[in-house]
Every structure is written in C-alpha cells, then in structure tokens.
Length: 488
Ligand code: ADP
Ligand code: GLC
Image (cartoon, rainbow, N blue to C red; front, side, top):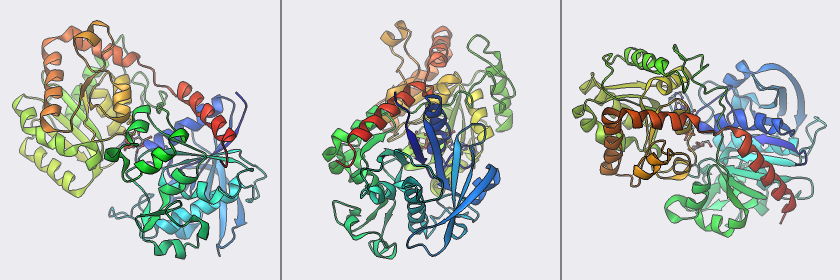
C-alpha cells in the first residue's frame, strides 16, 4: 500500500485529554497507521490540561485570513509514541479550566461554535500548507462534529488533498443558531440544505457528512443503522444519499494500555492461564468500593458516561432484582445529574450490593475491568463501544444490547455458540427492562451453576483479537478510495 501523508484531526487524544472513546481511538489509530509506514500527524486544540501533559513543544506562529490574533502551532510528540502532534494554540479559545467542551460545572462552553470554527480554520491552513510547516498532507482525516467544518472549508481545493470524516457518534451534531453562520463569517456557498443548514440552524457535523470525500463510522452495524430514521438523528436521508461513500470500520483497541498481565493500575496481574489474580482483584475492588468482601455474589461492573445513550435508566430498573438475587454492582461514571443522583440514591439504599463512584478515573476504570465478573453495557445505541472489548480481554463477561459495535464484537452464549466455543457474552435485543434482566439472569445462572462453561466464556473472550492492525489496513483502503473519488 502506498504511503500517504495524513493529518489526523481530533478534539481529544489519550493520554493528553479524554472524555470518551474518541480519545482512545485518536491515541492509538495514528500509531497503528505509522506502523503501516504512513506519515501521520495529529492536530488538536491546545487545551490547558493537554499542554501541561504534552512533551517538548516547539512552536511556529502564523496568521490566518479573517482571524485578528496570531495563532501559534505547537509541535511535539504524543507521549508514549513517535507520532507527531500539532496543538492549535489560541489562548482566548482553549486556555481555560474545565473540559474540552464543557465548563467545570458541566455546561457547554458558550463559545463552542467560535472555538471549533477557529480550530477548523487552523487545520485548513495546515492542510493547505499555509502554516509555515513546509508539510502537505494528502489525506485530512476528521472526526466528529468538532472537526466537521474542515471538509467544508477544504471543498474548494479538490486537487490538493482528500478528506475523510469519521462519525464516532451521530447524536452530537454541533448545532448552533443560524446567526452564528454570519458571525463566524463562513463562506456563503456553505449555507443551504445542501450545505451546513439543518432545520434552520447551523450544523457542524453536516460539514463532514456533505463535503468529505469518504465518510466512515466506527462499526459496520452502526454504518447500516444510521441510514434508518431510528438511528439517523435526522441525517439518515443525507447518509442514504451518500451511501456509496459511507463505510463502517470497527475500532481497534490498544492492548498495550489494556492488558491484564501488565496493567500498572491493577494490584494483581493475570492472564488466560493464571486467573488467580482476577479473584484477588475482585476482593480489592469490593474493598475499594466499600462492598462486603464475598466471593459468591457475581460482581457486575459499569464504566461510562451516564447518559441516555448508555441505557443507565435500564440499569436503574434492574437494581431491585440484582439486590434480591444477591448480585453486587459497581459503577464508575459521570454525566446527567438525574442519573448521578438516582444511582447514588440506589447505593445508599443497598450498601451491601450497589456502589457508585461519580467522577472520571482511569485507574478505577481499569480496576473495574480487572476485578468484576461481568460488565454491563445495555446501550440504546453504540457506534462501537470500547469497554466491552476491554472487558473481553480482562475476562469480564460482557452483557450487551445487540446494537452497533456491541453486536459486532460480542457473541451471545446459547447452546450452539457454547458448543462451538464461540460464545463470549450475553446479548439482548430490546432496550427494555425485561430483556436486560433476562440476559443478566442468564449470565448469573451460568456463573453460579455452570462454572466450566463460565470459564470457557472467559477464555474465549480473552483470546479475541481486536488490535488495530486489521482496522488500520481498512483505513488505508478508505484513504485510497477517498483519493480516487476526491472532489466528486
Ligand atoms: P463513549 O465514547 O461513547 O463514551 P466508549 O466505550 O467508546 O464510549 O469509550 C469510553 C472510554 O472512556 C473508555 O475508555 C472508558 O473506560 C472511558 N470512560 C468513560 N467514563 C469514564 C470514567 N468515568 N472514568 C474513567 N474512564 C471512563
Ligand atoms: C463514540 C461512541 C462510542 C465509540 C467511540 C470511539 O463516543 O459513543 O461507541 O466507541 O466514539 O469511536
């Protein structure tokens, strides 16, 4: 495969800044592309938190048309890799406390449109070699709405390069009032329903969906689902119109970060042949979460954003049954205030069975994977999902809904798949209390009554290989197609 020069555009990257799976992907896919001999650089806003963690930053300054301030471009390497990193430094937009999209109180930054429009303009300048780097990519790979304006701004330059837009989550549009279109001084050719207009407002994600040479999403099943009204968030018509340019590539995971045999966050290491460490991690997890140290109750884990997407209401609905069946549950997450409060209330009511930690903790996330027996992921939709894949490697049997990447990575345990030694978890169909509870009950009954089959599920899961190599090759094919179809 020919070598490409790739500018990988992202609004978060592990280990510099992370709110969810996009950071994990941006932290590992570029290195996998580099291993395929591609010249790849990551570009991201210079958030305050990220600047502190980035290593050895040199800088260049450049001026952009229509932007009064000079924007600095900081250059370094992504820690732990040899991948080059560019940070777009505009202190008025990015040097502040809080998260990449929200203030410390959890409200969206009021100037998100301005922040990510500035970011997109800087990316466009770099992509067109107007940023004094003396480097010209032939592929600009954008991710989610925060970089959605980039393919739109690059549209007038089809001969220079190709753009690829990856949808990690179609639910987040980057939607702003129409007046922003004027105040951001976006070129007039971008307005209209064939451009960035969406129901009378301004949609950043449409920039990617309308103008990118190729569109991808992070699992084959989600690529199909988003073409239907149920999963399309009003964009299914557009996606059907561009169906020939849409494909699904399953995310890989970084087994250097997620390996129970070496994980620095775990007190006790283990592998497929030596599982004793996992039992000890279970005890440690129980202690850390203030649950009774008992071996007999199955211990369920959940790590994630506490939002509607993740089916948190369904989890809340089965808590009385979990308690009645003497099952323990540990939850780590943050998100909607309502879910946070209801989960904390449940923990108060059932201190022997339910424990909740509200917040973001890389260490606890790893310890839950390392110590729990099962992992709950009853998502209403899930573009890919990474935690179920981490769970497989950690021998933590996933209980998931059959949607998106969950459907593509977990094999339901029933007579046939067990006999074929293919089963890796428990899968259910409908986002409803009864369905989730039935799947959980099936898991509990195998855990308690069929230890040999349980061991087989663990072993089959731990043997699955979702490393990036294969998916990175699919991205190379996608880049090739984008180059062939550019500007069309
Ligand atoms: P999404 O991107 O929709 O949030 P994914 O499953 O793709 O879902 O990725 C979520 C990533 O964020 C995983 O690496 C998960 O461990 C991590 N994560 C989510 N919430 C937390 C949290 N509260 N603390 C630590 N890590 C978290
Ligand atoms: C999104 C999705 C998640 C996916 C992640 C990384 O946040 O919600 O399913 O795994 O992006 O692609």
